[in-house]
Length: 503
Image: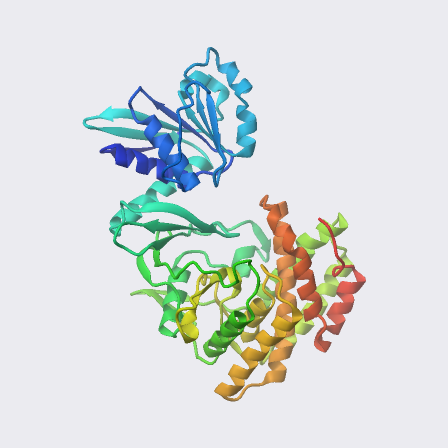
């Protein structure tokens, strides 16, 4: 396979350092960046900027590894800076612990020609040559590392088109999807958030010839975010203003709503904040929301329904991933048939429930607390692209049984009480029907999450999600205590699905 190639003209040392910053934003463990160029071509400038970006420390001392041969840095992505100039043979790279370094992080290699064939074929080669008063950077390679680097450079181009080409980029947050976020800042302006939302890659067909994401109605492009965000803002919800957009590439430049967590300084739930969020949901659920929303003039987004197929395929994540993890084998036909029978009976009970705009992941990671403001404006809401039209009870369950933080039964009850009181105050409200729908949606959501967190570990190599499983099992037990879910609770109990497990 022929290498892909990108070129960048770098007018001065500042632009060389900016390229290092852009490459740092794309770096992942296992990546190799090979820096090639004559003395004075800018390799050290680029390497220093890359390492300082990863460390988020503009003053970090980054000495040349010419004599030590390798310098290691415990940064966001651990990076090992190799200088192979003094190697007498390519085989000596083994003695420097090169393979071990890639198991721990990424490698930045100067004088890569000294390594001959010892560098992996997925290495990204960055050749720096003098070009007039500046430099020419030529990037070549193949595989994911090169594609990520190319996308990061495209993000810089997007910033330039929005007037933010000289902005500093720093990692902000990633999530369980392919989306990631950065903080971009420049003198004299408030920082903004750069959202990187590549088009969803659909997996193989899993049911009725359709991929999982199609059945579950997962957002496939950034257009969904734009449409939902603008609808929510028009409806009185504090969501990020969109400063610039590239819908084709999946880049957005967003208002930064703040950095204060919805939780306290120790990551613990604050009862009053959960009640405020419940009251915001009550306001939203008292409104009428369109299911056909404008993205840009002439382009619309159809908000999908949270239909039976979507509910079931999500619930099936428990059967498909969690059950094999705790039993060591696939679920029996008896378990699968009984599982589907009981869930279908519960979905029948949702007929006639109140349906509204359902944000789907309305919980602490997606809520910014802005205590200096008043009313609903104290809550900044992010990550809204996967919204559906579904039972209003679902988002309340997402909030009151927060998947990322342990809410005591008391806080759960008070959060529910705040929501119910606000709904009653706004007009007629069927509390009994809501409480039953809440239990069904809480059981469905927590069943799904047990499966998702195991899938993230088994399929995606993200084991840190497993630490949440005891909390999710506890939430599931709470949901199943509602009388309407007695048969499902008996099924889960008979098959040991509620027992504490160590995976």
